Length: 375
Image (cartoon, rainbow, N blue to C red; front, side, top):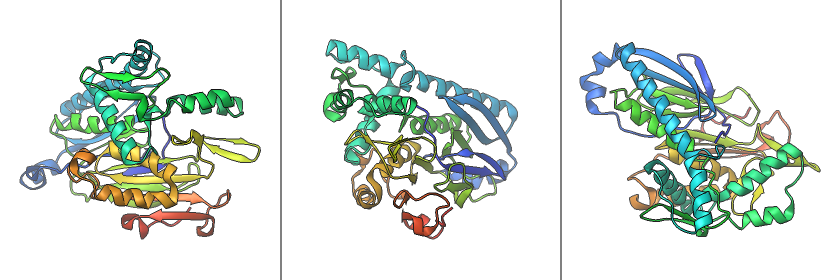
């Protein structure tokens, strides 16, 4: 489920990595007001490990080391549980097993609550984005991964067969589990880390910890602001691989996710094929791009960052307008998309860095529009 993103988060001047995803949750009034003096004296703790195939970090403000250690261990355990359920790299993970068993039997296979919720969200965002995000793109993604290794296009007959397995018609959730058609394979890499980050922050909250940042390979979940601060300082990078942030935002209680192809791509016969696949066509994007999304939760930010890259400059504004007008049932939560923000960079005519304003097209919502200088 590893997916490189392009945001850096700085806390007290310390760079935490690239990428950010998070979720909105209103800080209880008692934390903001009644207990303000108490929480100002809470200490800052950091923990690091490797989870879900990527470097993972927790930054939190807690009353003491015992609470902080217990909370961090609970988060690590939660990541391990979710990886065992959702990884498409592990042949024995739950998500791989149920596709295999249902495809062979033609009957629904019982699934865990974690997998059900992830697949429910995957289906939701497939519908909302018109298929620009689709968790059944797994077989096509694997063929293009092979192509980057062997430096060649997938065999056309095999690719066409894989494309036929993509789409909502190939699977359904039932009361007893999930039912998939033969050949359907899920790849929830575009949403699973966001889901895991939301779960991580909820885990920290069970320990009374509201001010926290969880970073999984650069994808972040931002909780309440650090004591005495307005928020967490997030540096949003541009199109250059490992480049310095193009600008900064101060955010709290939101998710921020990035998707793009600065690091992984294939060049064949002068064409640059991204690792990002358009599920609607089964073909990689061929124009260099980076999208950053600020959303009310990490799950939404994760899925929409991938979709925005696929939809591009023309379709993304239409998507955002639709999302603002859907009801709570369609969105999955009341007000889920009210604070949605996006910036999308796309290179003009395969231009090479440095990317000046003349070399890129940009779409930015108001929250980004005034601060998006190129780099």
